[in-house]
Length: 285
Image (tube, rainbow, N blue to C red; front, side, top):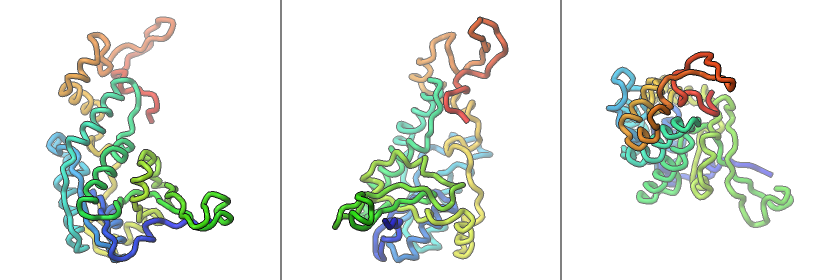
């Protein structure tokens, strides 16, 4: 059975929408598709109000003015169209509010999974259809592959005269594997998703960006949650609780999970204090 990355089967002239965050990965993804002769349109998603981020950390936010300008500069260099789309309302509803609610319930959320499933891919595909595009590409380190062959070659997985379904596979750079964040994408959307970086390492991506003179070539990676670039989870949750009547109401007086309290053993012995039970969740790192 031969597995082939779907993005390598996209021919010249194919119309592709590329999610451009203003980072090096999405910049190189756009460049690789442009090199293949694709008609590339870069889209930067504005998912939350960067004005809510503390000023000294605002530039680190994924949809900050600086990030948008970086994406626009790369698009100009690649001579491709670029648009900024506002998904703030949908992102808040599908990602931020469930994120805060999960912490309040004592569970650890994964906002990237929800974003990819409910915001990034469906919203970009909706825009792609309006533009007449056939595919949506991102700078994720993952592979979308398809097996081709007859029943014998594929061990019965692929029928004669029929191509197999697209599968999500791990990338060449296992240290950067992002497939975990993509598992929730529906199959119809995965069929239209392209991951040009799947066969490259992070070092190779940066080298390609340098060779192309991309403005994002040396841009550092973001390790924080995109809407909490300062890493202050407590501050974010407390602000969100104060701003969200439903979340605030869910914590009855005396049972506020964001409030410090005693650590008590099953025997009733107080052995210390905690910073708020919401910050000790099942599944936390």
